[in-house]
Image 1: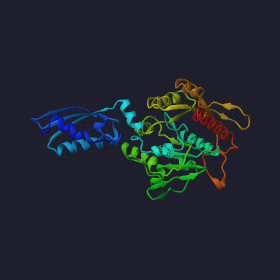
Image 2: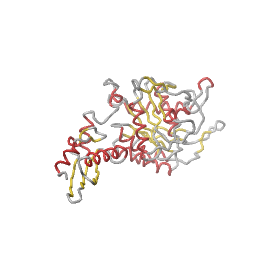
Image 3: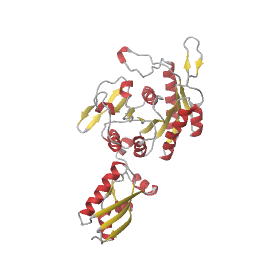
Length: 356
């Protein structure tokens, strides 16, 4: 039967799957116990991220390595590494697989903006695509990841019908209205439901970062899944730094639910750029009277709770369509709502470039 020291020596050579460093470097082995009579071992390991496929892979690697050396039964417990250790290895570039994207080959930082909501149906994707298009119209290089992988809709909203090209081992995103787009909808059959497990979806999102040839970008917007589920949490943990916009409707209940998404952002050290209140009112083209169909005050209340700004109130409306350039959810600059989105884009630019 292996001794405690022999077990430590074996396990220490196995890598933390996120930090990509041997456990001996992260001081990941916290406790080892041996029962010689039962030929069993109990190991407590600290890793950078609990749950998901990465923890399962590490568990299997440890069990395999010890059983090959004669241990009959292996018990494993996991805890999370302290933030200082995680940050230490994040700082030396071992955490982020998409660090090259973040720094544009060291020339200019890409600004990540995650667009989140507490629940579906509040117009989060509409906000994402229109903000992206307005940033592009203002002269910035913009990409969008449609990370709402159960309810992907960005390509349809932007009138995209083609699929990405492949160049060697890299995926070339589709470009529309000056915005580069990647989405789960490009990789599933039409109207086929996505029934993958959470870890598989998390890996797909990671591929959107590392396997897509984004080129130079100023902004990369992520249309997050609504709520605070596993996929949204994985994305928050993937990004070393990100700004976040929370979308809500004026209804107090929607704002209450959206606060959870804001709390997740703050918990993962992401900065909240502001709150956008969608469907704020309906304005009659005849009387010009405003009707507050979904109530009032939800956006302001949420912004106050999250200690951020209300950066836009978007009324109900329909974009002007161009037959030759059909994009059913994109507002033109000639549309009143298009001008509201442009004002929001300018605020985003001011907030993200302050101090540069």
